Length: 447
Image (cartoon, rainbow, N blue to C red; front, side, top):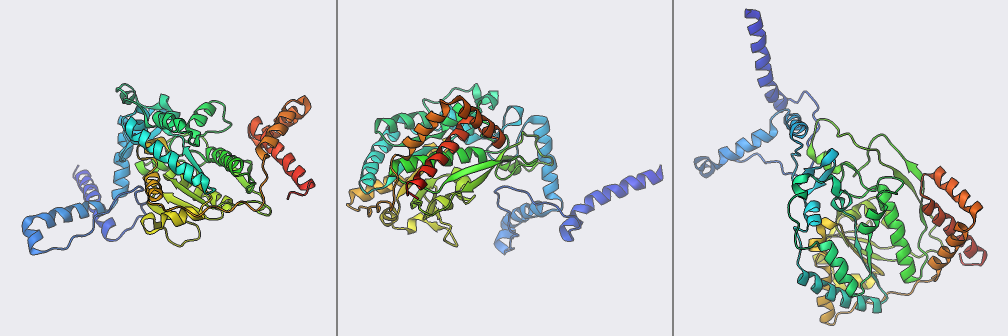
């Protein structure tokens, strides 16, 4: 009995001493916690801070955050809360049904709890109409993009406690669509399109444990955006397509970004994701317009993957209209330090995009700034017409698609190729029609 007591006492002392030992001389390699948080700095002692007690409080906070095995202990606590209470110990994260993860701002937007008000949205739409008219007169293409939102896409996975609460007066998404339509503003609604494709898409458009659209969803959206710009500007941009998919056992960034911030011990079981193998055509004879994209983090999937730099000559990402990223720069710059009218003068295409969680601040003050500049008589330099445009491309491709679709033999061939590539019949139909159109252009001398 005495030996057992000694053994238990020894184990207790070891458990108490190991964190101090790990803190002083790390003997185990512990992965740091993930997410956005600020580690406390070791405070300096002064007579004033010591006698006021602030030094002791600050040092206690610092010591708690630097104790040995803290990341492991935090993960253990987080894992227990997740298992037992379906709770995420991460700011703003909501654990939905079947362990689908959301951020609370998306649910707030879907329920209309962040509604900006009819008058404010209508005022923005009127300003946007004037800005659109002036930019169009200068040869610019302005388009507003409503990116998809996870709460709109998976409402059936939202916890009942949110579903049961009364909704707001209206949603920013619905009212922006209506107000912008009344002003005849150019809008691409990917949110509605994704919801329409939800049950028919070949691969998932949203990950279970991430908050952004999937790589497959991004590819579909980029292809649609290219077609829109080509049609509006009468140009032929660099060809963009995908040749099959990678179907790995593990998720690629950012498809697990919300779960990573939860800092759990074990991976949350999830369904597999598909990653298209993207291909870009030659730039010879193609037009690469200069672009300004004012957007939230949904554009990171396009900019950070290098897609946008292959399509745009001057690729400017104005993150929340605050920080400007350009692949040709070493460091990002502040929009406040740029001359807005000069930047617009260099741009051919201006895209303003937001997911549902950020529509309450859409369009990030950008339209207000351009509106004010125009009222001051400051006008952007006009865009130069493209060196070689190919008007009617989309109409021609649509005609070829109709011809193929009306031929039973050709239609069966398209279905076989679509199955082999792992894409939908419609996607393969467009790829074939686009290829036929390009061959006709080459044979007629339009290279």
